[in-house]
Image (tube, rainbow, N blue to C red):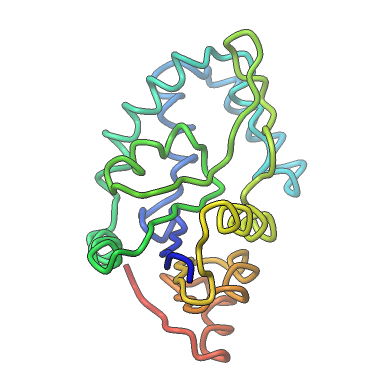
Amino acid sequence: MGSVAAIFDVDQTLVQGHTERLFFWYLLRQGRLSLPQALSFLGRLASHPQERFRDKSYLEGLGVEDIIRLAEKCYQEAISPRLSVRGLACVREHQAKGHKIVLLTGSLSFLLLPLKEELGADWLIATELAQNNGKFTGQIAGLHPRGENKLRLLMELSRLQGLDLSQSYAYGDHIQDLYLFRHIGHPVAVNPSWRLKRLAQRYHWPIRYF
C-alpha cells in the first residue's frame, strides 16, 4: 500500500491572492521591470489571452541569481503574510497523520520554494523556467502545471514515490483542478470559483473556506 498524500494548490487556496502577480508588481516596484516593459507585457496578455498563463516573457534576459534573490524577498514581504491560517492548520493536520504534503501550482517554482520550506512540504511541483547563460529566456521548461498537466505531473510523482492517490486528498479552488479531483480519493473544494462550487455540490465534495 502506497503513502497517503495531501495535495494543495497554492494561489487562492493556501495563499490569499495570486503569487506570480504579486511578484510581477514587486519587480516593477523594485525597478527590475520598467513601466514601459510592464505595460508592453500586459498589452501582450490582453491581445493573446489564451497565452496569459504560459507567457513569462517579462523575465526574459533577467539574471537568474538576481531574480531568485528578489523572489525570496518578495515571498517574505508579500506572500508569506497572505498565507491562510486555516490552510496552514489543514497542512499541519495532514502532517500529524503522517501524510505526505505536495504543493501543486502553476506559479513559479523558485518563487514558492520558500513556502515549501516554511510548510515542511515533501514536494513542490510548479512552473520551471528555461535558462541560458545565467539568464531567463522567458520560456517554460517542461510541462506547465495547469489543468490536465497537473494530473500528469502528479501521476508521475505518484509512480516514482509510491503514492496511493485513491486514499489521498486534493485541495483546489478552480475548475482547472477538476482533472485532479476526478483521480483523487478525497477532493476538497477550497474558496471555490462558482463553476467548481457547482460541481462540488453535484458530486458531494466537501467545500471549505480558508
